[in-house]
Image (cartoon, rainbow, N blue to C red; front, side, top):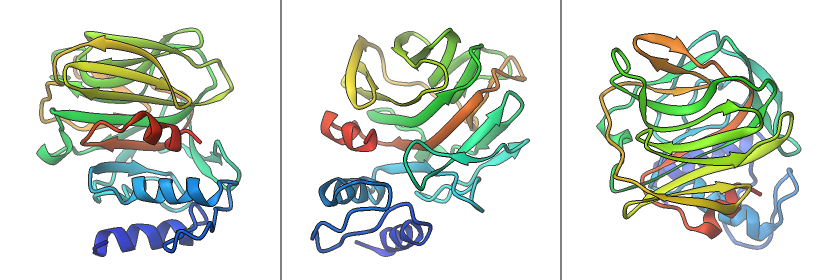
Length: 247
């Protein structure tokens, strides 16, 4: 398993998020998952392709438990109940912004998966998770989840492939984007809901952003709502794996 995997699993078990079931004997978790689901989530949480994971547990809002790319923030939100029993999520109120310094290792192009749990509290123009592109002068993103319409979130690559998914106000939903082989797939609550052709994401050396965006050198599109389990993988997760994240 390796040192990184052991540390991550112990940290998760200690905070009550996941009970690691190394024997595969149906241990389950305290948030209601059965043993098989818990084992599948464990595997995705120690997957070497997991580049970023923010779970926003108490005392660790800024901690990336995947590769140590911890965030900084301008206003830092607060803890709130998450999408499942025993989970803590991040609550932001249209004024918070998280920056993640993205070195070359965090900029996958051949394939990637970006995913999170989200709950919109106010319908407005806002970004949940994204990678700004030339943000000093441009308004595009390498990848992004954002909302500009009532009860709709858009999953996007390069601001050219844009797939809308239904995310009604004050409801928790799991949203994921998967890119591979020239296609972007959008998932809502574990189900594939749309696909679009696109080129691979093109990056500039800028921080990724959670709960906000940066366009033309201005911090904008602050999110008002809740986010949890923000993840970035350097591979295309399968439909079955996305379903595990959405349970």
